[in-house]
Amino acid sequence: MRPQPRNKKLYKKAREIFTLSHRISNYLIYDLAPLQNNGNEDPNIYFTGDIIRQSDSLVPKIMNAENQIFQNDRIEQANSLISLTNKLYKNCERLEQTNSNGKEFLILLRKELKKFKRLQYNWMMSL
Image (cartoon, rainbow, N blue to C red; front, top):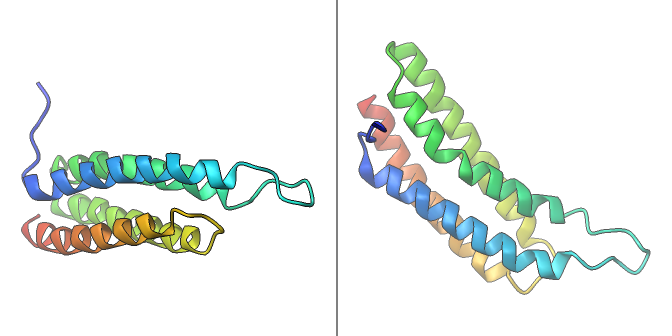
């Protein structure tokens, strides 16, 4: 049986962020996939994969932190989640600088990440 998260709002927001990241990435890939005029690929295309990978790691990090026996280990895992969230936010900012029609969606994702950070702060206080 799979353990249930303590903070269901945080868990739910992490799942929403993953879904949103996946959809945004799929949208952006079509704009970033064509080769540039010089024949090179757009280096920003890798950030689309990064936001999927990072958002997919949010839920496991939450569960890992909650399942630690010792408080120091829980805090260490929670800090790792903060770092991951910050990287995800930074990659959204980088993707906003690309030549794509999907920039507006990235603003939405960053707003959801800000909500997640607030939930995350409250969650950390309860660990």
